[in-house]
Amino acid sequence: MRRLLFALIGVSVILLYAFQISSCKDVSHNINNIEDVNNKVAAPHDLQEKQNFLDTLRASGIHNACREMNLDFNAVFGPLAEKINHPYRQYRWSVSRDEQGNPVIHALPPEEEMGWTPWERWSLKNNKAIRSAWILYPIRTPIKRGILNWYQLEVSDQLTPRLLLTPENLVAKLRSARVDVVAEWLGMDFNTVFIEPLDSLAQKIYGQYRWVVIPHNLAADGPVIYALPPMNKSDDWPWESWYTDGRLPLIHHVHYTRKKEKTSGIWTEGPGAPQRPPEIFGHTWYWYDDPEMLPALSNR
Image (tube, rainbow, N blue to C red; front, side, top):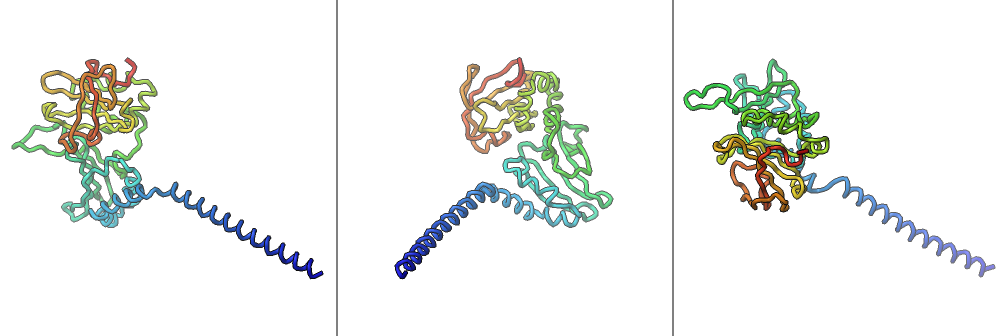
């Protein structure tokens, strides 16, 4: 009887020990799973980038100005922090006061885009918040005493930053970047060059580009239209530019990071070069001139 009792006790101890080991393994497995999920949900670099941008806005007085204006900081400006590579991160953000002493929030574009990319302002009109956009070019009124005057491009009670709005299609995206205005200034028909030659796939691809207008001294200080793809796709999606140098009516350059059949030259631009979009720095570009002026990915 004693032997049977001892045998039962021994079996119980073994089973209990085995259960404890199994439980520990399960707990360890669950902890590992939680750690994996956390890693997927929160990328530390992205969170830090987001926090840094929000800190920049707060340090610039934007958060306090929003409270004075009864403006929802998180609703209007918070989404900008989610756009890790959004151009608004390159803007100069600040707060001033109007004649009545009310705060005015400013989003000033990078120096190279100044005057063509709108300077945005949030202010109060009749105690209600509005957003306005201001530009220099093309010059609308005669220059007096050598002074260029900013003029209002638009004013709206739609407070979302202008370039954060999702365009309905490629036409809307290019118009928002003022490509249509510059195309007319260069003597090009906007629809004939930039829209009609593109099939649905090409429009979808160019819809992922950043379109921006930047003046350049090689363009006789006139505007250059830039079409800039995600740079991790630039082996097959080119960045392109349209302008005039004051001698030739129109010039269209096409650039890839991989040599193509049409390649006629190799070119690099040093970091921080003036009057250039920052996306093109740090790459070797294989380029050619396109006399047809049509986007490189169009149906020719």
